[in-house]
Image (tube, rainbow, N blue to C red; front, side):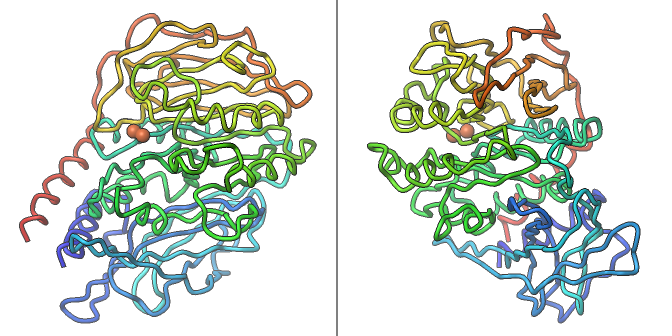
Length: 464
Ligand SMILES: [Fe+2]
Ligand SMILES: [Fe+2]
């Protein structure tokens, strides 16, 4: 009951902030105790053009949870999805999740803006949202964002606002989340808060998640993460829902790996290793010349925090990455930012992947300020700012990467990465546009107001 109350309170609060549910859309009361709320809406791509996963939560077990969708050019031709698959989970501290619904839209036109709403046709709809599908051409330039270690703090909201500003500039197509999403740490209501906070972006931009150590939640053993997110595990060749998957998008192949279950990489012969080897062998570099991986724990990082934790990953996966020409690995876990040059076996190597760690996503645990000795493979690091990685894939051979701090979206680090014959080479055209002074503090009142309101509501709900 406590969780349902919080769910309703949170939704009501966000209603008042005006960006989740339309205030003029009637809520349907089945009876005084069952108010239907639709919330937690987020998207994911599957790697199949014309598909989009839409997930949302309902406060009661509606009989026909569906997504209605249409194009701007034909608003009267509205389509209804299949009825959603339903999941729900309980934890042993009396928390019960809302009813988590998942729909995969199919047959969508390429490069098309779709409007949609989630709910139950006979009861209630959410507000209208929209997303744009993958383009029909592999040659189109596209942009995506990579970051990790988000959380629900004021700084998390700054990072979210930073992404919204970036969205208005570059209209990036995907978000790669390198893990440590909500920092719920076993508190299910924290997951509900997280899903509500990110909705301004998760309703329009697919969140492609990788698992972090904070998703395990000890004895809960990833249950919230596994229930609240879907990803294309079947489409990427896994027989059941594993914590790793891959997908093609535009001219790139993306691989999400699980760096958190140590049993997965004792000797390079585990399930994920076998899957990854097969996945990399089957990449068609003519269709997807770029290959990106994203996962939580970095292989190469000079920060003191979590120092040495990437050593087993280096032993297990570095040779595979190198052999098959992985271009860039995006990671988090370390609450700071660092970019390497191409590296292999602890030395700069133009044929090795570039490793970019960005765990400066706003986590309430703060920034990791202590750095170890400088290494020859480390191109740039900083831990003064929260921020996001913006990746502009220009064509089959060139991408431009920028790390932007979250206060004003100033560029703190940038580099051209140039592919040659399946390998990635970090260009010497780097270190441009880097400001010499730290950006001044500024505030984003809407985000702060939201966090404060959520905190107050959480306190109220816990008293119920
Ligand atoms: Fe972590
Ligand atoms: Fe973290």
